[in-house]
Image (cartoon, rainbow, N blue to C red; front, side):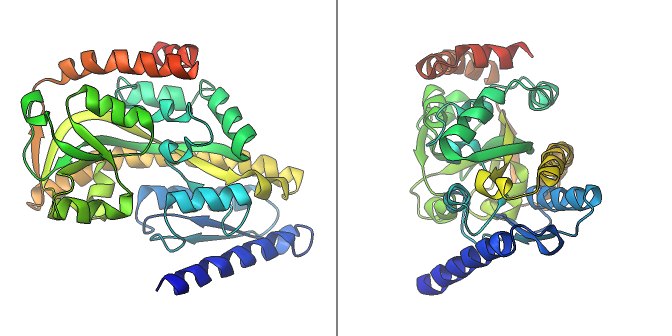
Length: 331
């Protein structure tokens, strides 16, 4: 099985390079390949499909957008490797934590409890506040953020009910790999562990962890409710998912098409944010009505904020990003 997957990835890489390099970037027969963890009904996949539609609407050329979903080409760390090398894929939606090895400050844009509400989140992503992070990622990894999707509100998902700090204390949970994620959840008394996303279901099933944190769409897509049917409304984070394009792929495009791609990325991001933020509560209610989950309020959310703020401040100081954090808070 591994050999078959490896062969598929190599073939995809060759096809991608041949597409872009075959005739000096002839836009009439160009293919740009994207990758998604999800099926075409997920908000992230819909966002990438919208991106392709917007480019073709604005361009005089006919560009084929080949989106490979359902993790056909691997998972996000694989996408990052492909994009930095300029092979296999040209664009994808990537979690900030999976970009942190190139730009350590990047997870600040996705840090738990950094956004007050959806209005604050959208204001930040619609502004140029995050420009320094974009420039750092481009400089260190040759990856371009061309838009911002996301919008799911992240909550605790667990095998057992959690409704207060006492029940949260010692709770073994999967978190994303960026250091700030572990620090925040340690500060609120949980026992976080960075586990590959593809291994989470089995990790809960076997008791390695007792849960995770995520938004409604992923809970539904991956059926985590089968092993973790309790959702606690900590509402600790609103997802930020950059639409990322390989700088190597971008530079091979004609200049006029580059501008179209940048504008389409921005518009597709706004479309994706509206889509996911509006769908999030509906998906949660859908699972609740189907008896797949039990939803619990969290009694001590104000206390969580008190515990987390010093951790955020210390992390930003380590990274020399105090001004950026303050700019986000001031929006």
